[in-house]
Image 1 (cartoon, helix red, strand yellow):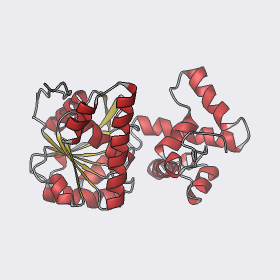
Image 2 (cartoon, helix red, strand yellow; image 1 turned 90 degrees about the vertical axis):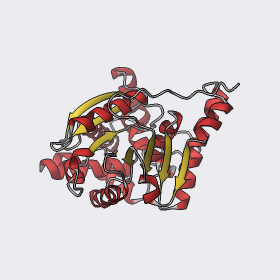
Image 3 (cartoon, helix red, strand yellow; image 1 turned 45 degrees about the vertical axis):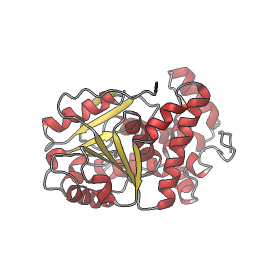
Length: 304
C-alpha cells in the first residue's frame, strides 16, 4: 500500500485543483514544486526549452536531497512528479487552470505583455497572480479587462523553504481574489501578510535598502563581506546576511528594484551603489552565475 504523502486541500472560497506557473527560473520552478507537492495539477511554462529543463532539474535535485536527508521518500517524489507537467506553450499553462502565477523577470513591459496572454487563455474565473517583488500590481492589472482577479503573490527564494508569502492588494482587486490568495498561501504552508500596492511593498523596500547599504560598506572597506553578514546574523538574528541574500536573490533583481524605487519616489538615495551596477554590468549576478558579492564557483560561497 502506498504511503506517499499528498496534502488534502479543504476549500473555503474556491477549490484549487489546477495551477499554471509562468516562468521556469528559480522562483517559477520553486512555486511549481510546492504546488506539485500539494497534489495540484501543475503546468510550468517557459518559452525556452533549456530553461524548462534547468527548472525541472532543480526541482528533482531538491527532491533527491530530501530523500538523502530523510525528509521525503522516493515514493513521495514519484507522486509529486506525476503532478508536474512542462510546456513551451503559454496557452497550455493557462487553459482550464484555477490559478495562474506569473514569475517572469522583473520588467514591467514584459509582465504586462504576459498578463494580456494570461487573460486571453485562462478561464474567466481564474485568479491571475504576479510574483513581482516590487512592481506596481495596478499597472500590471490595468492591461486586463478584469483587474479584480489580478493580485500580487510575492514568494521568497528558495520558495520551498521560505515561510513567507506577501500578498499585495491593489485598489481594483476583489475580496474574493484576496481570500483565494490567502487560502492558497495557507495550503502551501506559508504565513501570509497583506500589504497595499506601494513601490517595493513591505519586504523588498526594506530588504533592498539594507542590501544596498551593505554593498556601500563593502565598497568603503568597512569590513569583509563575510564579516558584514556575520554582524547581521549574530548581532540582529538575521537568518542570512544582506550580502549573501543579495547573491541568492540576484544582483540584477536587486538593482532593478532599487531603480524602480528611486523612480517611483523621485528619491535618488534609492539608486544602486556603483559597485552593484559594476557587478551587474560584468555579468556577476550572484549564485546563479557563479559569482556576485561572493565567489560561488565551487557551489559554496567564498570571499572574492
